Image (cartoon, rainbow over all chains, first blue to last red; front, side, top):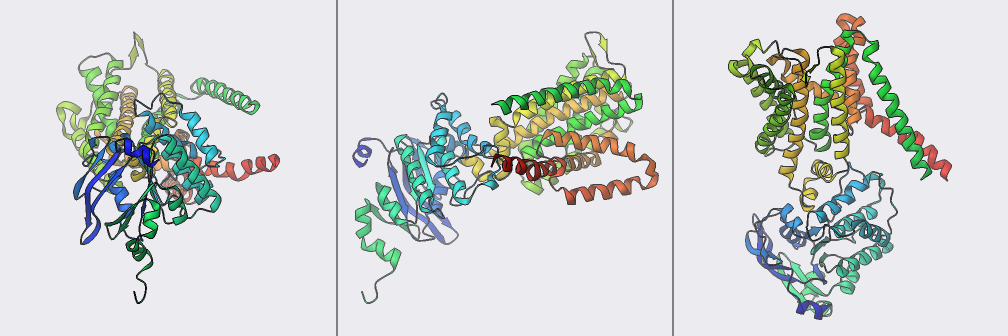
Length: 252
Length: 325
C-alpha cells in the first residue's frame, strides 16, 4: 500500500492546522497528507486532540490557522455540509444515528449523499449496501427503529452508512471502542472494502493491536502536538511515544 | 411474497371502502354537518403543513395560521378584487405563501428550538396586526366579504356538498404527495435535521436550507388551506387568522401524533367533531375538553397514532413472532 501512495497525489492535505479553545491548545501546527487507499492511524492519550482534528477536517469546528486542501481545492472555509458533498465522511465515537427514524432512513442518508455527486450517481448503491451489510454481519429488519439495535450494531451501521457514501476521505473516530472481538473483525473487514474503493481512511483508535495491524502510517498526538510520525514499527519503538503513553520510567 | 400480495389487497379494499364512505358521507348528512366536515379538512391541510415542518423537520411553528391568512388574502384580492380566475388565485396563494415562508425562514431559522418557536409567535402577531390594520390590502378589521365562489371552466362550486368533494380531493392529493415525501431524499433530510443537526451536516445536508424548504412546503399547504377557506366561507377577517388558532393546530398534531399524516387527520377530526358531540355538556364542555386533552397527553405522549403503533408492536407483532418461532 505504501508504494502505491507515494506515486499518487495526496487526497487530503493538512497544512499547519491550529485550534485553541481559550487557553487550551487542541491542535498546534498539524500537518499531514492522506493518500488514496491507505489507512492512516491517529493515536494519542485522552485529550490529545484527535477528535478535535476530525472535527476540524469535517468543518464542525473552524480552524484558527493553517489550511485544509481536498483534491487540490482549498476547503478551509467551506461549511461541513459542502465538505461532505466533496467526499469527506466521518463516523462518531458515539454513533450519531437518527434516533427517531427507522434503519432504512438512516442507511439511505448515505446513499442520498453519494447521489449528490455526479460521478457516483449512476453506481449500483443497492449492491454495495447488500455487500456491506453482509460483511458487517448485520441482519436487519429495515423498518425497525434504531433503538432495536445493540450498541455494537449501531456503530457498525454507522460505518456502513459512511462507506455507502463512497467517500474519498473516511474518518473513523474510535470505531472499535466498546465492541467485542467478533464485531471488531467486522469493522476491519469494512475498512478493507473502503480501501478497495480507494478511499483514504483516517483511523482514531485506542486498541493498539488493531492500529498496528491495519495502519500503513501513524501520527501520534499529545496535547495538540504532533510528537511522532512513521510506519507502525517505528512508532512502537519511539521513546517519545512510549513516554507519552506509559509515562517516564522511574529513575530513568 | 404472498404476504405482500395479501397486504396490497387489504389496502386496496380499505381505499375503495374509504372512497365509498367519503362519497356517501355528505349525501347522508345535514348541510351543517357537511360544513363541519369541510372545516375539518381545511384544518387538516393546515395541520398537515405542521406535520411537514414540525413532525418531520422538528421545528414547532406557531405561525401556520398566519400563513393560512396570507393564502386567504391573496385569493380574496386576486379572485374578487382583481378578477382573476379562482384557480389562478388559488395557485398564487400557494406559491406566494410558500415564497413568503421560504424568505422569512432565512431570518427565523437563525434561531434554534424554543427561540425559533418564540420568533414564530412574533411573526404570527405581526401578520395578525397587518391583517387587522392594512385597510387597502385586507379590508382592515372589517375584513373582506362577498368573495367569489370557486369555479373551474364555468362549473361553480356553490353548495357545501360540492365544496366537500373539492376540498377532500385536494386533501387526498396533498396527503399522497406528503406521504411520498417520507421515503424521499428530501424527507430524509428533514428528519435528519430534526434528529441530529451535526450528523445531518456531516451527511451533506445544509441545515438552514433544509429547514427553509420544509417551511416553504408547509407554506404551500397553508396557502392552499387559506385559499379554500376564503372560497368556502366567502368572508375573511383578521380574527380567523390569530395566534390561538395556530396554537390549536400544534395541539391537534400532538394529540393525533406527529409521526404520520394519519395523526394530523385523526387530530383534526377530533378537534372539529368533538365540540359537536360534546354539545350536550353545555357550559362544562370546555372544561371536559381541556381535561380530556391533558389526559390524552399523559396517556399517549406520542399522540394517538404513536400510541396505536406501540399497542400494535406490543400485542400483534409479538403474537406473530411467537407463531413464527
